[in-house]
Image (cartoon, rainbow, N blue to C red; front, side, top):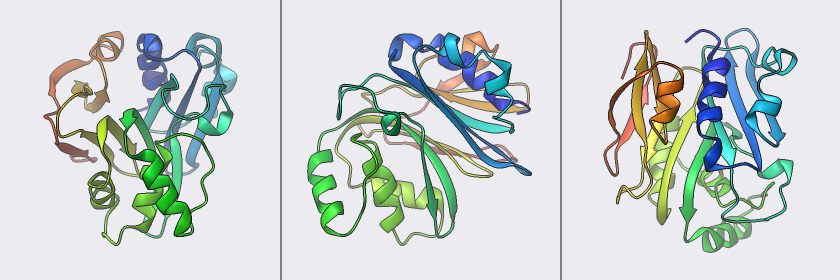
Length: 217
């Protein structure tokens, strides 16, 4: 999807009620690599500026608006999603919505095993669990990591070529799949589809993972 960041920003604007503390967008461009922008405040005050949006080229992207339910209540830039990680088999950005109820126990375990956390967010546990997985693809590592996670959540992730969405086994947190032109969209609410003129395809099923690449799903 050309200029993916513009679509992501519009979607975040529609989802502003989900979080007003901060927002972030990550994109990938074959020539410029991964690009990230995270800002405090409202989407309209940050991601409508051409000077900022011009730093986010790419045909694939994800975004997130923050409302702290775990970790520091005073916003810190290191807590603003999406999070980004470099793995032995490639890089990925991840955005998480929900509550990981065993996050404190996972964090203690991971720190004892040598992980170094950069944020106070429970979402960062997913990145570290993925880094320690021996699976061969990012999607498989995410599946492996989420088997350790307890709670209600939906997760979206992106690599250089793929968009990935996962919903918790009980389906407590929402996640929907949409389509706009030749592109695919994942969102926690259909209002983000409406604002970009995307068609709702279906809800992601509880416990389901979808992987979207250049050839479709």
